[in-house]
Length: 232
Image (tube, rainbow, N blue to C red):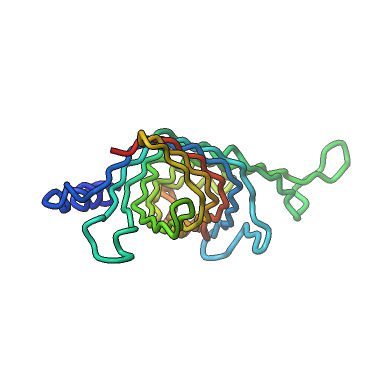
């Protein structure tokens, strides 16, 4: 999870020779959006829980800090490009999703009545260390486009009747969007934008049974973002 941070430092540092031509901005952002995720668990090679096409939704909010530089030393339209680094300053809890399964086989009798076993499963996750390197293109003085790559750590917390316990994973993704901006003569600015986020998934193997795996197909989201900051 350090590679994006290292890349950001190298990226910003590589422009030091042309610092007089750079427009530096720092700021804070608030994000609110809806995210969807799809996943499944495989027990001994057989998918036991899968909901293709039935994605779990989550309403999430994020706060982040960012810094960026405008590449004013580049020729022509390229001088309207800025590059930056954004870091979410807190963890995101997904909440807990659960389901109760009733065993299809009759297991015995109680007071002469057949009984079935009920099995409750629950899973939750924490998303942390969300880092993004991005580029902004100022189409006009007030309209811009954004595109970037991001990384995040996902920590799982599950209670499954299979007895499986899964670890954590790092995922990569992309973000892209568009927005509008306003800046005063003193350098204070505000932005409003809409972004699409696509995080890749991955597969984790149970630490208690190597034949059991859980797969996250991916996380997609649409967010509204408000940013304020200062240009130097």
